[in-house]
Image (cartoon, rainbow, N blue to C red; front, side, top):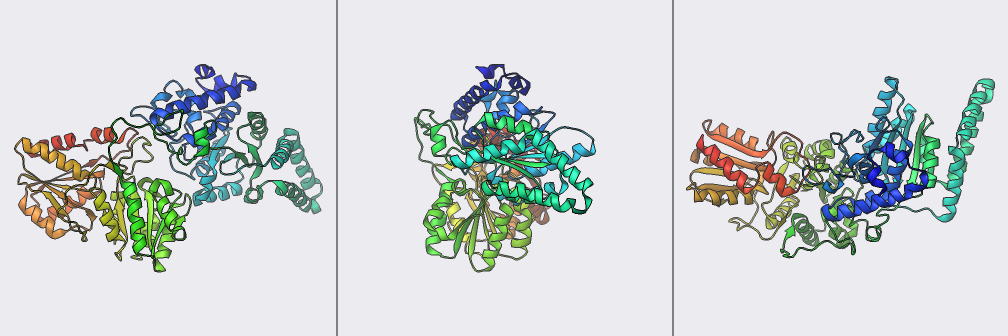
Length: 624
């Protein structure tokens, strides 16, 4: 294999251009082989193979900097930058991250996992380079989805104004080029990217500007307008030209014979420029080409069929996302004021079923979480009951809007926070561990966490009937059966006792309730009686209930699947000490650190948030 000898981009550059398509083929085969075993972002990475090859063939990384927006399309980049031998460990605990990770390789300029940030980061690097009198090239690779985020447009606007030496690769994989337009743009881009054309263009501009001062500026404007109109006849670049960028494209993103010469011609230029590339998601693997949405973030699958691998013993398990999906559809049938909003994740959040049932009441705002919250606030003010379904890690992008547009206004908006807690293989940028600590600081906010699937349905029904903003957080998990609840109806702030005990009280939130019950069963074998409370609410808290707990127990444990610092447990501890300053409280949760990738169960166990870990922590606590 050619890849066996490519340990860094310098090795790639030694190959003749005629061999690069074979490198692309080998990369695709390796990505398909590994992702079929580990899961991962398949379709987007297959589509960006030639982009990675062309960039590393033409640039001098890591001196030249490449920033991959979101980063889930960077598998080929990883393979070409010394990680081919370890690529089998993709997304596994202790292995290669599924996203660019600065601590993993000097070729990963930033650790990235959220969309629409690359242009801002690249512009910052370019500005620092100029102030430090350095010469490296800065490239940001963005997708068309990233253009739905306002941050990207803010950066493009600023970059065009500053006129920095900056290259933006815009990878469009939601459109195609017709043969006629393709041939015209190829010819035009060949002309306008040629060094001789650009030297002539610069020389002509200087001559007109300095030798014909009276009418020079008008002539220059006419000349620029002519090139702009010429492009505008056949290419969609006028918008970027107006922002201050030179536009090249659209180009066939899978044709290295076009990509490499064009890129080589454009790299020496000194102005902000955009290279518009058209690619196909899932390129080279027919099942992913035909169904790119399913292979965006794929679970392990059979390569021959593209179908998920089936387990020998299939359990009848249902995910929280599936339960949310079914519950909101049923509630919406009864209440025509319920509307649903997602930020480019209808399938991931389970809102695809709502979309299919109520297309006029479903809104996908793109990768624009802050807008989603503002949009929901306006809908709520107008009399609707919006439910905004967003992953916990992405909700962080809208924290200001949660405070300003929802909480201050006391608007009844429901935040359905999916993937709360440990998400697993997507790693550090995607772990949903901060939402409790963040939202606990927001006045007027109701925060709930279901202990099982049935409780999620109850909480959603409760939330859409409240006149306050409500957040429901639930994990990326599946359950086979629900818990035996003592109290079915959800009442504001009210917890439920699932197990009585006299030695220690455990106040558990959401996904940790089941773990607390498991630990309590094991502790009973040691003669320790544990009272297990399903708190249901992180905020507000039932102060009368807490007063009784503080009187009844000398030692109390709290458990949450979020960071302890500033979280649910610390709030409980603060309240309990107000009622009884001699009570000992042991908050259990995640430490104040970023959590790397690995399987969810493994990570929970690693941080002591499984039954065995809770059992041991409680035993140690009781010995003090």
